[in-house]
Each structure stands twice: as structure tokens, then as C-alpha cells.
Amino acid sequence: MPLRLIFMGTPDFAVPTLREIAARDHEIAAVYTRAPKPAGRGMALSSSPVEEEARKRNLPVFTPASLKLAEAQETFRANGADAAVVVAYGLILPPPILQATKLGCFNVHASLLPHWRGAAPINRAIMAGDRESGVTVMKMDEGLDTGAMAMSERVPIGDDMSAGELHDVLSKRGADLMVRALAALERGTLQSTQQPSVGATCAAKIDKAETRIDWNKPWRQVHDHIRGLSPFPGAWCEMGGAGRVKLLLTTKAEGAGAPGTVLDRHLTIACREGAVRILQLQRAGKQPMKVDEFLHGTTVPAGAVLS
Image (cartoon, rainbow, N blue to C red; front, side, top):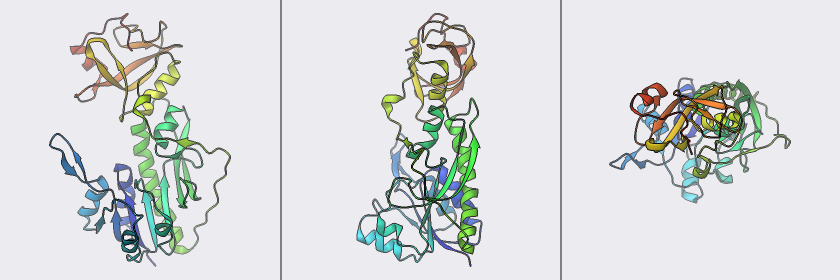
């Protein structure tokens, strides 16, 4: 029989999974997401991408500030769901919520667990220079991404792939994987295995203090840092008269010099070892632009030093 589900998610990453589940025969009893937040110059309340998708489908939406209160837990339980699907929800699920459905809570996590447990697995994988990532469906427990693994799928990380590009790939793969997991759960054939402790790493939330580019590192580390933070929050440097500039795309380049030195008119920048060429960047308050467009109105001479 089709499952009666509660969907829990907030950002764009979660929307494909909601769409795929809604396209199947499963019944979505409720959608839980973060409450609208002020955004834009007028600071008007802005609903989450998941809430917008749920409203389009006339699904009931709940936006509790916490799930720790008895009233919120009773409301959740009253949905009478077989299971909950959780994708980048953003709130901690206390034990009464984890135990409130018949079959449990199942999460799509954007890494190959136990590697990169935590808030920023996509960014951390690229910043660390990993050659592959993936998605894992796990049955949630009280730990931080420590639940038993039901299914996983590997995804290669290209040399110049950005966090934004990997995000989009994993979002779609995660949606497909969750649909397959739910089909097995419906049949009673979904099996899970405990995560090994060996290989566990923490994907800590990105801190603003680590977004500044350090040209004193080898080109590969600089390149991975930039693409791992692209497009958000963005790795940045000071570029003379242009001020603070976010670098969004780079690639390996030829050349050498003092770290941070501009080597040519194409914005090839020397690192401690090797160099990178800037392909796309963004000035404060402006839209992202290709380097040729940027240089059309801004002069950054060879020999200038970025900091």
C-alpha cells in the first residue's frame, strides 16, 4: 500500500525530493519547513523554497520554531504518518519526533556516510579536494548523521566542479534515491546497516572567517577553496581599486611568482606553488560576471598584488 508521509525540508536542495514523492502514489500528510524570514531590501517575509513548492501542491504546511515542545510533538504525531522524509530541514528532531511514526524518519544526506557528517558536506568535500561525493539515505537516530544507512550512490567530483554544481547533481540523485528507498520500505524490503566508525569526518558549518583566500597556499588548495565556496558564501580577496571581490570560478594556470601577484592581463594569479586563472567573479552588490567582462571596465595590471 502507498505510504502516508510527513515531508521535512527547507532549502532548494530539498525541493526535488518533495516533487518526486508527490509524483508517486504516496500520500503527503504534512510538510514541515522553517518559518518565513525577512529578506531583501524591504525585509519582507520570504517563505522557504519547500514551503513555496508545498503551497503550489495545496499541501498542509507547518513551520514550528522548535519540535521540543509537547504541543508540537503531539501535532506531529496526530498526522498518523507511516514515516517521515527529512532533507536539509534545519531543526533538531528530538526522540519523541523520531519515534512518532510507524516506520521511522529517513534522511537524504549529501555525502557518502560516515564521511562528512554535519552541516556543510558539499562544501567540505570540495574544499578538501575529494575526488567523489554522493548521497546516502539513512534511518535517523539521535546522533548527528549517525543513523543506519539504507542506500547510497556515488558521484564523481570534476577538477573544476563548484559546490553549486555538485549541489544540483546531488539534489536530483538524492530525490531518486529516496523514491527508491520508499518503494523498498513500502514493500517491507528496505534494509539498513550501522555506519562504521572508521572514516567518519565532520562537515562543520562554514565560518565567515575562513572565506578569505590565502594565496600562500599551493594552487590546488586555493582552487579547491574557491570552488568549494562557490557560489555561496563565496571566497574573496581584496583586488586593488575594485575592493573586495568574490572569486567564483578558477582553473589551473601556468606561471609562478610571489603569492597573490597578478601575472598577466587575463588575471592569472600566483600561489605559493603554481597559479590559478580567474574565470568568474563578483564585485560587492553586483551580479556574477566572466573575467573578460570584468576587465572591460576594470584595470588590474600585471604585477599588482591581491590580498
